[in-house]
Length: 318
View 1 (cartoon, rainbow, N blue to C red):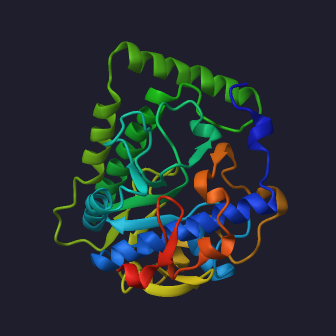
View 2: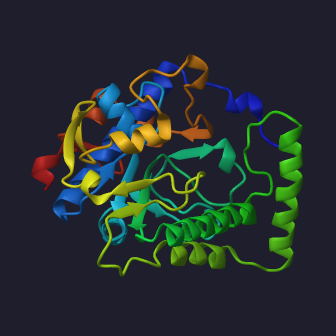
């Protein structure tokens, strides 16, 4: 067994989860401020979309925030974040560190640690984060789109296997051993043949962006989910963006999330049974200097907390 099941099955205590969510709200307020300053549109979605509609904030047991951008806005944000947020945050993706095996970007809080069990052996720094997803244009030709999405799925999984010979499957049966036998062979072949992580990541990005010059399109997609063609948003579902109450602040969401959420989750307004209320309980978690800051200060959207933990009026700072 290559996954520590005892760690995976653990659950947060209420105090730890509330602190993690409060730190993420602080990060969200910093993120929103920089996007507002540079007029960069974004939308929270997926689990965060269920959270805002069902709970007006986090799903009670959830521990992350998912943020989507249309590709051009995603690239603008990454540039601005590295230029103006580096005192407090690190941009992590496979462009910055080839050992990062995913096609997302993480906006990570400096001085913290958050490492999921699935990424426990990855050789790069991982901290508490906001998850950022670029959405690329979808061709109207359904066959071309399916072919593109299958290629993206294939190369993104090769990228993962280039770093992780035994990916987290959580099947708890002989099937897991069989699949791990195959993935270990793939890992070995990729390594022996000298297939670089940088090459695979570049291939993924090239496939995802291949139709971004299209003028006539009506949908965008996140191309690297576990299921093919599962993250399609029509442009008229995203825009105009809708600002909704989220915890003690607000957050922008797609104008109409219903089709997308039903496609992924079914009846998303009904609470799932307790044994399906899963999160990303970390293999490693360290709040750094934020472990001693009160939750009220962390969650206050009017306060900016600097990299030393000092709070000041966000409006005056701007």
